[in-house]
Image (cartoon, rainbow over all chains, first blue to last red; front, side, top):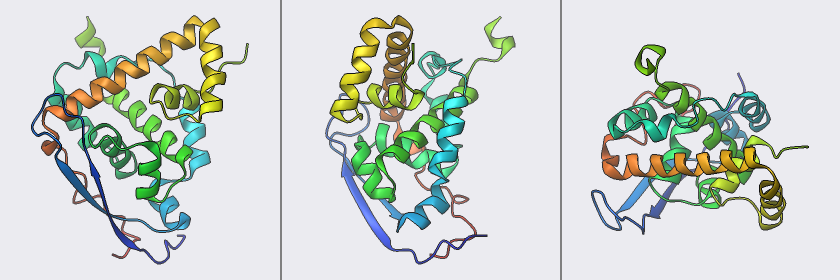
Amino acid sequence: MRSCGRIARSTVTTRRNRSPRGWSESRAITVSICCGGGVTANCRFGDEAAELAAAESESTEGIDALVISERGGRVRAAIAALPEKYRLPILLAYYDDASYDEIAEALGLSRNHVGVLLLRGKQALRKTLAPSEEESR
Amino acid sequence: VTHPTELALAMLADDALEAHDAVEVEQHLAGCDRCAAHVAALREESQALEAALAYDPASVSVRSSSSRPASVRW
């Protein structure tokens, strides 16, 4: 197994500054994460090229699965069950309102790699949330 | 017709494409109903994610107890 090398601990704080509804206005969320150089990031977040190939080969079927999942709890449970490499970028982007550049800096990844992980994470959510054949009957 | 990659469409939907790439993809969308509809669906999906998380984000843990890779020492 490839060594992850030395890990630098950093704390990333971003602020959600638009909150039209929900549980708090302008609540700061601090995500304490460990991130380091590219080697470490690749250990945690997978190889960008391999993830991209998987993302591009994925069917777009079920793209409306999240939208029609009216029960937010089901979506949140699906997010909580995602592997960390997909869950962290999704939470930073869609809960914390962080930009791709902010996420890239926080996780020690390239901007494109962030895009790939977000895409893969959403593809995984679609599969989880897609109505089963029985439900759609 | 060569369509933009899934990644390019997803990044455009999140307003995360570099400006010159965004212009190129937008030009494609103007003449491709299929890709335009796909980007619209991706935007709707992102909004659904934001809405689901805004409702009660505390229920989703950023770091689960099982998330730490065994190979990484902290």
